[in-house]
Image (cartoon, rainbow over all chains, first blue to last red; front, side, top):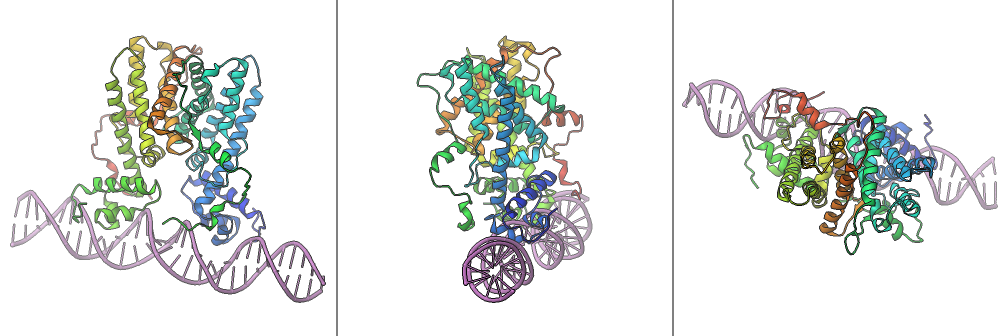
Length: 236
Length: 236
DNA sequence: CCGTTAATCTGAACACTGATTAGATTGGAG
DNA sequence: CTCCAATCTAATCAGTGTTCAGATTAACGG
């Protein structure tokens, strides 16, 4: 659309938009930096003033997309609300996760494959966070044993992530979005009810760590909004 | 190692070996067809007499690797044996799945990302099959309600696949293989016990389909033991 | 209004890639 | 030994990511 040559502050976003569209059209790897640049009406080298490399572009796109997913999940969980069904929030979040992967498989594949590789990532509502919050609510309401809480986020996350990934990668096929909703609900309810009945081993469960939470903990105070990798020499 | 120029029937496997090593060293995309060819002591164009394209090479490697995973899972389930714990087989298979993704993340990423894209694929023991067999055993032993059986394979597969993928992609981190074993066991037991207690909706669960089973059903009778892609004219 | 300056983009170049083609090399069958 | 199909090579093409010296732009102080 906008093919003015000098974007002045908006080229970065314009490139991300173009890249996302290209991913949707030609898959995760079926496009080039030059194609994205041309689409915004800019020379190939212009992109290198906003991203250290093509990989950096893809990484930035990945975090942008993951952030959007987190918001979708969160608002889905909100709308489910604290009704009669305590598991409703988690189920709704999981449905959003799976639906997203089904509706936008190429973008989902990119997001997952490159998720965690952007050093400047700062995602407010990461999918992992949403799952965590809902599980905490389950414990507060009394629908989940507190002994089963530690690490449960990873079990739930893994379940919905697995279904989403199998669908996005085409390893598994479903007839329409409603079937996906049902399958997601079935899987999540099974996991949650399974977790409520487990007997924790002595010493509790081992603690997994999420790349996203680690990053947030590591960067305390230093707010670098531009990816710092710009100056680094290309590997090999 | 073997740098004779004329491989005569073994170049195909030699290229697959080289590609697998390169994936392990430089990741899924950090290597070139030329590099693999040079490593086997052959010109770049020689590869095109065995694979229609670089993607075809990657696809073939993917199915080879998935087949190996299936065998690992199957023998893990076997060794678990029909002991006192009916869920033991599935748990063992899941552990193998997750461990494999943790020990060989780059290869796992390739296998999953390109799994199902090889038109000549004929995997004897696909991971999906192993899960299916173990679930059937559970029903036979009486440890799983028959009403919950249809489609349960996809719930279980999704769970272990999600954990494996999160680990392989570096989105989730664990301290050592034992922690992975525990996490896998926890997740799988939760799913299975959750499935045993569910109340199926009227009309039963929607039936998902696996790309692998579909392919097997499509090719009935025609037994091509050599992938047919070799002789076929290259697409486009 | 002008000139300075920092931000932003261009053009040309480099090494490398996947892919194609016509022709050379090989090893075994007759 | 001869022939031949299987197998590999050399040369080449368009296109890629990346770099860098220099041109273009927008904004601001005087």
